[in-house]
Amino acid sequence: RMESSILRAFRKYATEHTPRGVDSIWHWLAVAQHHGLPTRLVDWTYSPLVALHFATAFPAEYAQDGVVWCMNFVEANRLLPKPLKALLEAESSNTFTVEMLSEFPTLRSFDALAREPFVAFIEPPSLDARILNQFALFSLMPSPATRLDEWLVGHPHLCRRVIVPAELKWEVRDKLDQANINERTLFPGLDGLSRWLERYYLPRDPLDP
Image 1 (tube, one colour):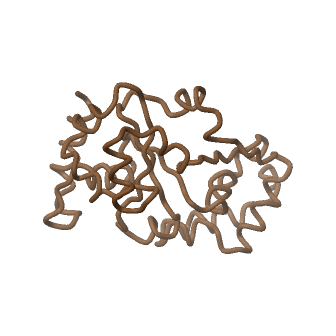
Image 2 (cartoon, one colour; image 1 turned 180 degrees about the horizontal axis):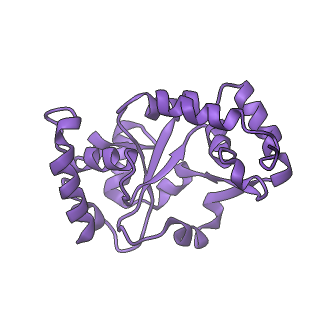
Image 3 (cartoon, helix red, strand yellow; image 1 turned 135 degrees about the horizontal axis):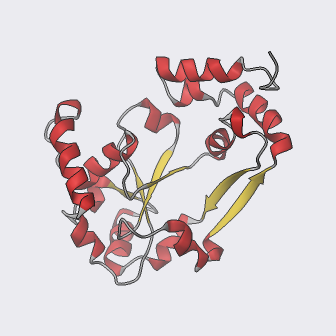
């Protein structure tokens, strides 16, 4: 399968950039997603302010409404296969960690847990300050071909959309900057600092000289 081939190649070339002794497929999946490799994981955040940042981070899109998706992952856990429910109950948790999922050593063993699609939520390991500052969370489904948006059509009670009107994006963005929710804090380092300054000093009307 293509997914296995991509992850195998990533592990081969990324080993020198990751801690020694870590060889769980779940850890590698989280590392790959965190560094931009397309995976079956979907990025989420616990923080509504961080979510609003990503809905208002691109001035070129300010003429369009933004959207923040809200997911009731606690309720989604009711649809998990029994082995996964048992893991959560044993840990008194509503989310998984890569260590908890190590009971399933391969993606294939995870995918075989149920015939019907389900969604599990994973707290990624604290790989760096970006993970921590963004209050990151991943969702995972038992197939790289399964689409979360299509699955949610059949489970509309698990999610809702909050629309950020285009005419309010500048105001929302200003308030987020005042609250120190921006590229500089969410992407620590010179790259994040540069992205913040580029956006922050952009004229309010991008067409202005």
